[in-house]
Image 1: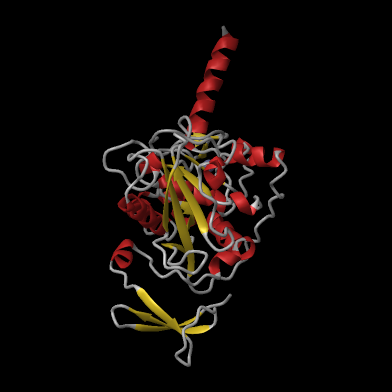
Image 2: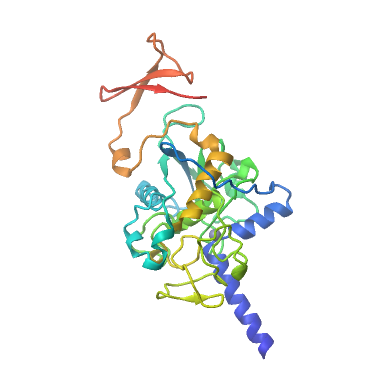
Length: 348
Ligand SMILES: [Zn+2]
């Protein structure tokens, strides 16, 4: 009887944990396939300077109209990311007093890529019709054009986010730093991207992408290795297992230590996770600067919010200092259709 109960509990645990995030399992699969270089430990001694803007491309892969999500859903996701990664989320004020000293502001901005890898103007969204009704985490087909998915844009220059119908109840998964460049990026099920008014509670506020990007920038789950507390951060209290639902505060774990269930790197409902810690913010930024620095070299990234994007002006011409047409990455002048002119220095 006990054994039966044990297996029953175990299967519930696995179904829940698979549901929220597949990144740890995915990393293990890549290690087995020998396409994962051992993760370097991020140097947390960082000096912040200026803005960190990352160009994002969303690859929407659809088999039917429902899966072909509207632009508005993508804009709402971008807004959530920019709030959560700058401690600007409205629910940030819910952080309990107990943890107010250790909250972290990552200080990274995300924007839709303004240019594709060939230098053509882009919305930062690609749309691809596919024969595949759904995709599996185990074979990466969504990341390959030849398999009914979409090849990534240069993963050193763009953050690639694939949006598709994932098999089963998986919400999303991400590569950690060190994965093969051909598959580097984040995958989110189309039903859990952005803020959705109607469905599907409780993962309807865009926090799946917030969580997955944490992995992309080198974070572990707060419950990684349980009470041994090997998540790389002393300011995230040890916690025995992942947390589901929306528990009241305080909860205790690991010999009466108060749990930080509201951390983005736990598994609670979207509405019940709303903070990173200082250590997590430092790990992410140092990962960006040291291991993903090429993402910052593409200065075709200007919009920090949706309004700005919707009111965008269109680039009509790029000329050099002598007025000649150019597509070289140097000191250039950009002419826009609203008559404005901007000087740009673009590093190759
Ligand atoms: Zn995760």
